[in-house]
Length: 502
Ligand code: ALA
Picture 1 (cartoon, rainbow, N blue to C red):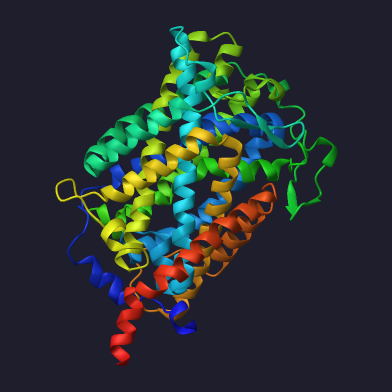
Picture 2: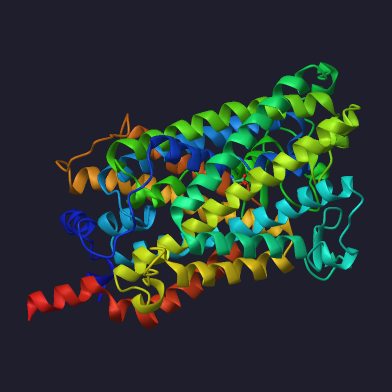
């Protein structure tokens, strides 16, 4: 049995499979891929999560938090890029793990990625709802209070979840259903829709930076790090933070801020899940991954500098911080414009996240680890994995309808950080096991960069509220039960090995 758990999928087999039947269409060029990357990255993180992170966790030092999280992502991005250029098939980190660490790790990472994309999509839908409500409020339209939020919310003063008085987050549900319908229809239409949204989003981010710069009062940047520079906790034991300032027992400080706004960077890896649909994946996917990450880091640090310079950190709005800041300095019209673009921008993130989860399942189905008749089904006309798209749509709808954003964000972050560290480790292993394999893109300074990638991901994981480890553990336990009940018995690799030995 141990043989099977650690059985690796040979690189040659992966490349052979790429030529086979039942493939997705190769329609995406480098610009569309970078747009997909930026589309997946800039969204709820900068438009929403920044608010609570600046207000209650890091203060103006959130600028540094964005740099720390950005650097951690660059290491992981370079490792992703090396793999994406070697094995440009759908499935991303799942496929990489199968080729290097074996079936069990591949299962863990595949399952973990589905968590990342599905929970991330629910977080994003939740944020979409905040900005959407601000847009329609301009016309004096409002949803009934019972329909605008989940039934529970996080009380920062006690650190507990309490009843919110609402019943369901209806706007979030509606947008998830709409995006699911678009995705079932097809990738090309989705990519075009995405490119338009991304252009609008980047234009508004630039507007925020350029116009906002005129309203910056440097006095607002003092104190720079009111919550300290740390935030590291080892399973509940705070290291170097200032507990008296902690938010309901949650870690605070610059590092804790980095762990939370790490969410803003999630998504560049989604480009690698689209590798199978890229026209020239070996060249374009690495370029798109690295470029989208660099563009986003620069924009983020500038937005946070402007935001914390425009409004004292304690007055930053928690629901729609960026657009509200413009109202706070007397630019009411700009508020509407930014909120409207926020809605568009967040929609494009939702699109990419919900596009990625079914593609991870698709790769797992091809390997027999989940039932191929369902998870591997491709629509005869649209050529999309429509059954899983609908399944993921239903799951995201349920999460977005009933769970609060704080809980969703942290769970998504810890899952993604785990995936990133496994990818960094996989690059190290692959260099040893397949030193001569063709690598159109090579991660520089191996082993230093992958090791720094692993360490920085661990640092951020330990800066998240500790209960997230428990939640991650529960998700992985569910996944492993499914693997041992189904995946292990139906694995295509296991059957191949059995037929060879008999
Ligand atoms: N990075 C994505 C966002 O901020 C998930 O919305």
